[in-house]
Image (cartoon, rainbow, N blue to C red; front, side, top):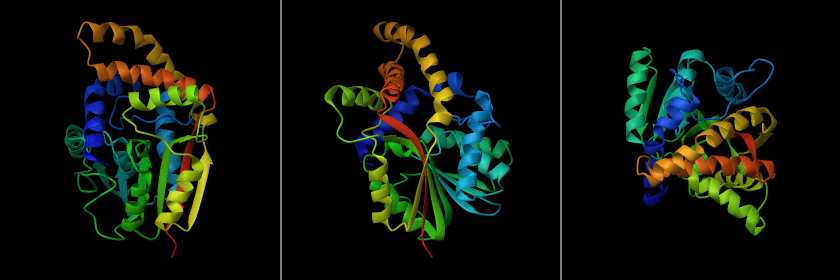
Length: 284
């Protein structure tokens, strides 16, 4: 990411911290991601953890594996992988206060020996070539200005036979009609994202980086309940955010976050994006 995008993402998470922390999820495995619903996960908290389980199963995370969590947020997925899958996890994040909190959580959960956190850009990490078995990205790649940079860096730090797992939002097509793109960009701007790519573009990025196997799975239907719940929260707090912004009680970024969330829901209803999980393998 470039420096301006770094600042935008850091500011976004700093100013929306309360919203993510108190409205969406609490606890050790705090998540800012969507929950995947199925027969084994029928309520919010279970669906959030189910997202971790599904990504871990698809990427084959097993005890002792070295995993890099790219854009680890508050450390929810990283700590879950260390605790539930006995992996050795390195969380990477550009937001200093989140990294500091992750370290405190890891120590509190007695996972600090197997779960470490580093302040770094996931497109330009300090790690050695072929260091990790799995690179994990759960709804964080959307913030990268150039997605292909992330694919190249992931390929570099993965061992032969290693896997990259990505859960993220894919636009359905490019270009869109003017009004369609307008609503899509309102969402992305509200969430400190410059753009999202199509599934075809993601596949091309992975192939160009050197991945020999790329499989994409559409989980849109399974996150619809989660998406609706998020929209309901945003609609409920929308007027408070607007009033608070005018009274200078709430940071403008929080108001943009709420409006962006509503736009995201409308964009989904109009068929402008889908929720995809990709598995990319570095061939042996």
